Length: 152
Figure 1 (cartoon, helix red, strand yellow):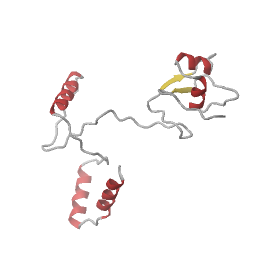
Figure 2 (tube, rainbow, N blue to C red):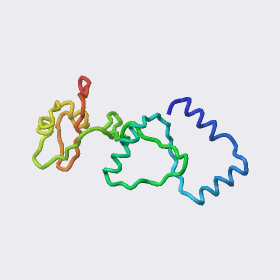
Figure 3 (cartoon, rainbow, N blue to C red):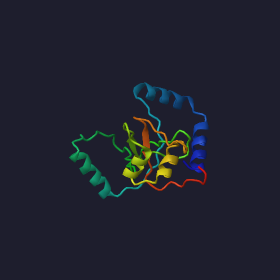
């Protein structure tokens, strides 16, 4: 959300509601479950909507009944939750993962995934002196080169 959108949201939320609006909201809450979301409308070509409908039909999903004049929001791309490492240095969301097996070394994992050993070590916060990993530990494989600072 941009600063301007944040200011607009604060203005809307800080505006006092009339008794009629409060009663209407309370009645609506009794009738439905409200899930708060923040969405931004996007323009989508009719062809893209038609293609999405075909994909839904091909997947065997029943068409949902919608209210008249309901807004349709189609995300530009799949939205995945952001997965941060424990030290909040890297985003693990788009990474492959590898579960360490008995007898595997960090070198074996780096070689199998075509990643530099020191990049893999730094990306996973593994001790530089020991390179110690343990069975069943999850190792995150970076999808792009990781700059390793000198001395790290």
